[in-house]
Length: 253
Image (cartoon, rainbow, N blue to C red; front, side, top):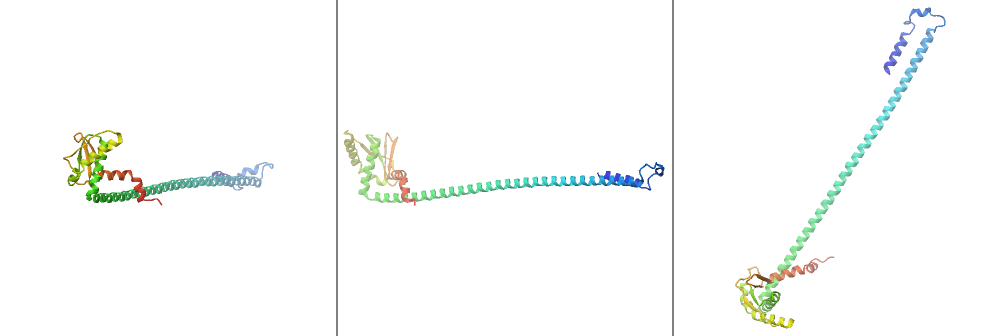
């Protein structure tokens, strides 16, 4: 556009009176005068310049509009990207907080369970201590040994049973065998009317030093055994009564 305007300007300059050929003076009287020709050329130049300026203004305005549209798109796209990134980071933060909270809760729960187990273990140790004191009372312990033998024999239902005990309890247990056999036969007689006999014999094997007391019954050459020690009975009570023990130790407020 600028080059076209420049060419028209050069044409107008060339057609000024000093550059116009002298032969024009010889044209007929009806020919256009120099002033009119110059005026028309100036009008053409002004028109072209006006059109060029208007066109340039339109182009500039359109370019500015396109620029603003592109800028808006870029800004909105950037905003959307930032929002998306922020939302993703926020979700990650929320997820991590939830994970940390869950981990903390689980750790607290496990710590609570461990502490409760420790307390229950202490209660069991205290109960074992009380049982050990009961063993020291020969009268009560002898009656307990008789009941333990009878209970075990009723589960085995054998005619010949070996009785295993701690080395220090051997004399006490030997003194209980006759009473236990009689009590067993009497219980069977009252329960079903049958007459049975039970032969109880001391086992050559003994209970380990960790045993609090009680007995282990065996039959068929030791292939079948029944643990009726105080340790086993205490463990059984602790397991069966665990809900009640927890209720007593850890009441819900």
